[in-house]
Image (tube, rainbow, N blue to C red):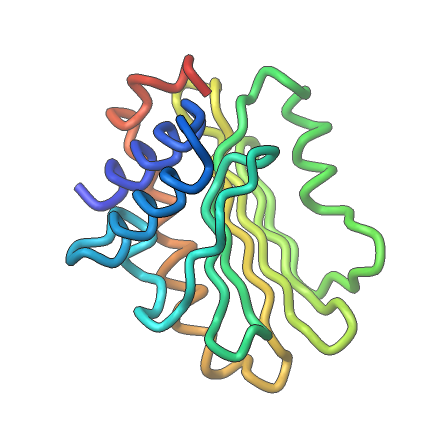
Length: 171
């Protein structure tokens, strides 16, 4: 049920807000009023949900000290070829990759960007119609503290539930 709720949330974001302020308020209320859906339930309770960016369809949370963040988002798969999309996830200027694992329809990449660790995972879902993404960034000296969270969120994304894809065409 958790993974289904996350993907329903992502699809709801893509429908577009009536007004940015009311949508931000509704999102904040949705996340903080008891049960947080899907993968977002794994986000530490004291992390702040950032305001909606109308040019980006996802949710980004920032740590209380502002030095770490976690983002969840979905993108349609028909924009790019599978190969091109995975290469774009892997290769980002200014990053030193220390871990890369790739299969036909997913990739995990991690490493360093200056004094921070980055982690990205993307999985092709919904019968090949949608990409599901997670991205982390946190100070390298906090690696041990983040290992468990990164593992839990990554494993949750790896088990994409095809039943959550009913509305993907609206992304």
